[in-house]
Length: 258
Length: 214
Image (cartoon, rainbow over the protein chains, first blue to last red):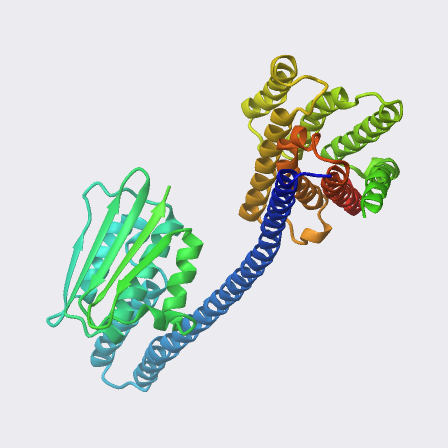
């Protein structure tokens, strides 16, 4: 017959073995459930990413359409009407009316036409960007936005290098979009723009003292302008950080590495 | 009750033939890591056969266990090594496949006679293999490469290793003590080991079966 001590050790071993076995089973179960959960989360994130990319693509297409309509309207309203007026003047000249006055009027009309075409072409290709680079183009843009009610400060090191033309155009368009947002919605009185560079990265910091907003509101309800900025950021493989809160202005930090 | 437990111990030793059969039938589909599991199963079959013969001849078959522990450990470590090169660093792999056999041999020479259970070596083996199995789970969670766990061969085999060595670790540590048990208790306690061993081979069978293509 087995002794009480033997039974005690036997029970200890059985309980211990079963406990360790169940513990290991618990680990396997936890792993199984957790892995499934992580996978479904990963799937959901990748679906959200795909939806967001599709949204950006649509916003891009929409943006291009808006731009085309605007150019068509500019050409129709400005250049078209200039040519119509010029034709009228030519007809008057043909009928032998006051030639000297008509020629003077025609010259004025042609001058207006030239500046109109220049303005339209500048909205398509930013003036000076190709020739003088991002720093000068942004400074010119700041000068254009600056007004009696809006103080705009721009700072950039003198040795700021020329960047890839796609990067320069992308950052310029982002800046245009940021200015647009500030002018339309922020009611700001002050804007500061800092452009910096290091061997590792180019950094653009844009800040206004306007209304600011709750960043959560951008989730899924971003307007065309914000989506356009995001599309350009993704195209440039840059990182974008918003620092804002209602009543506390907006600070935007864009970093392009490498 | 003791009779049935004894019968279970006897017949459960034939379960090893199941993964052996699947390994032979599916040999061409098996990855190098799974082929190593096939080698382990073949080793298990041989050792169980020889142990049974020795036992039938009233010979002490525990010297076989000392050798088997080294070979079993090497097979499983090699299995993890063959899964992915980065799974076990070179230095750790060399340390394990050289260090463990040395310790096991030193144990057999100086600490525990080959005619008794090698509880130190067996416990150390269990701890190391449980750790490797847990590392595999951690890596699998980190990488999230496996879409359907139930269809993954390595998941089944890793689970087999974790469950078997977790369940048996305590018994391995107290094996020599169980020798002094009276017959029924000894049979019952080893019936538990037979249960874990059956699960090990069934899970390995499932793993080898799940491997459809190489």
